[in-house]
Image 1 (cartoon, one colour):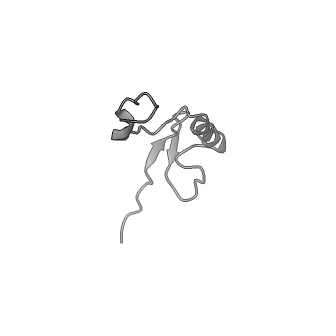
Image 2 (cartoon, rainbow, N blue to C red):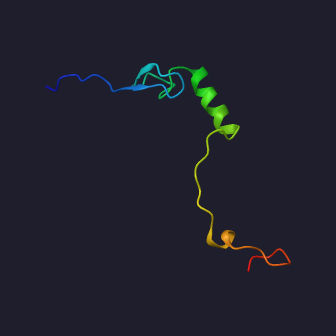
Length: 69
């Protein structure tokens, strides 16, 4: 018989509180709905961004007509 292991514990990304990673924790990885909504708001206001490298054609300077060369 396998021994029952403790669920992993993570820190809430917003406030840092220890959170058990279990199916019963409906807000994981956050500790509460409040922290989840704060995080969502930061994405919505573009405080968080996924870095993107510009496409090669975006790096070229436009010609006199404003078109890429």
